Amino acid sequence: MLESTKAATVLCGILLFMASGLSLAVDAGLSSPAFAQDAAAKQFSFTITDRKIAAADNVVRVSQGDEVEISLTADETAELHLHGYDILLTLTPNVPGKIRFTAVVAGRFPLEAHRFGPPASAERHRASGPLLYLEVLPR
Amino acid sequence: MAARLASYCIALIAFSGAAAAPAYAHGFGARYDLPIPLSFYVFAAGTTVALSFVMVALLLRTTPSSGGHPLVVLMRSGWSRRVGAVLAVVARAVASAYFLLMIAAGLFGIQSAERNFIVVSVWIVGWVAISLGSALVGDVWRLLNPWNALFAAAERIYLRLHPGRGLKPLASYPAALDRWPALFLFVAFAWMELVWGGRDVPARLAQAMLAYSGMTWLGMILFGRQAWLRGAEMFGIVFGIFARFAPLAPVADAGLAVRLPASGLLDDRDTTPAIMLLVVTLLATVTFDGLLETPLWARVDIAVLDAPDDSVLWTVFNFSDAGALRFERSIGLLLFVALFCAAYLSICKAMALAAGGKYPTAALARRFVFTLLPISIAYHIAHYFSYLFNGGQLVIPLLSDPFGFGWDLIGTASYRPDIGFVGPVLQWYVAVGAIVVGHVIAVYLAHVVALSTFVAPRVALRSQMPIVALMVGYTMVSLWILSQPIVETSPGG
Image 1 (spheres, rainbow over the protein chains, first blue to last red):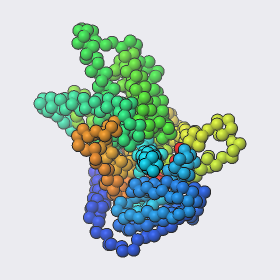
Image 2: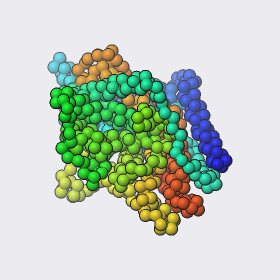
Image 3: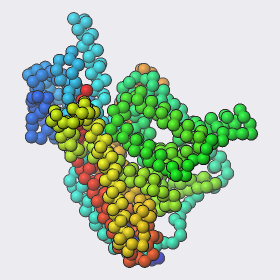
Image 4: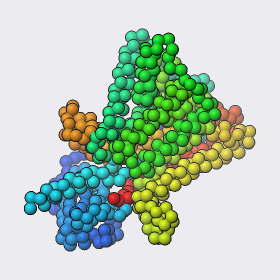
């Protein structure tokens, strides 16, 4: 009987440890310090060829609070959508377009092309993943 | 010029509709979770393995506590039961009204996933919130079930019209059917959540709900309301399985009671083969949902799409890209369920062998199946926590404008969901905390079940090893999925 009390105590200890870790995490999440104003924007530039971005790693990684500027050039008309931040951008062939924003929310956000080709054409893109992902890491 | 501008505007509106409805892995709604960082992954994996050893070593010396688990009965006084009964009637009425509003919105509202009340209500409120509420609070579905509530109301009306003779079942529910209908319906539901093209199309969802309602009420007329709820009403049975973990439980003739969380999982009196397989299927589908978003599965998707032009996919089946992906996922889902069942049954076979062949594998499989449920609930929490609170906020504006007609019934139509409400740091701690705690509870339950199954403590210890190994493996798979970046292949137009 004593033994089972001991086991129960150890279990309770473990659970308490987990709970305290969790409460610390909540604290950290709520009281994150004000972000340092970064005067210069983090700049990235990509070229879309054949409806793909040919980069070794198509993930843009920034920190929460960063000013971000992504410039994109495509070889045909493309309608792009950065999910989560909900930013739309329409590219005309071979003319660079830019999206610029402050990365306020942390998370992983896909940048997807919702349409390639001129707006009149009904052709939707072939099955594929998003063009790239934006990862905003928490501070 | 004006015409051009107008056509541009129309194109823009059409586009924004499309922008709001990309392809999703689980029913509906995007998740923007970052993968758990390596440090969390290593910490959780290490803790899991270490705790498993420590617990087995510690528990080895404990004797099983005989007798039941503590149960504190709530609502002892008569007035508290009356208040409880009134609240239950109100909750049931609200749930039934919500249910009817969902179907109406799906049939007559705007056909856009994010602007129609039905889609978020089915996947985030109906599935995620109620399953987590069942596991962490109590059997809420038993209270709310609109199919039950509406049919019971119809029964009362019938009784008032024909005093003295209520609705009698036309036949008795065949014992051989057991809970097999629920298992079959759950596989269909999981397929709809993970594969079906209509899962984020309001009208299709409403039609599916109507079909299920028709079947449920027909079953209730044929076999009686209670018999159908016990054997075939899939949602009641699945949420009831989750609710075995919950701290609140109904007690006969005494309202509610509080018990130790997870202690309800030790009650295996009613575990038939159908229920056993249903639990394993539940574990498999929840994990498969996570697997579908990993880069590993994206590679499978791409391999399927890149299949040569003379492949049977295109020549014999004549699939579109989306069709080929649905086909692949259907096969994947069934194989994954089969894999989980095979893994679990082989572990039970190993336990039977370790116990010296005196216990049949099937009996062990029924006894131990609920001990795996805490890991599944933990993964459910880890996977859906931020989705529930970030994606679920969409209900707030939609309650004001359920049909998407531009109404503002309760003044919340302009609410914009805050997708950073649950941030990554909180989500990581909740995910890892839930997984480790779930694993610890599972290992403890396996020990208690082993001691009550095998008489000799030595045999209990030996035969408990295979299932602890399975639990470590299952927890590792869950952690691995959480450490993977979310990648989605959209089937395009």
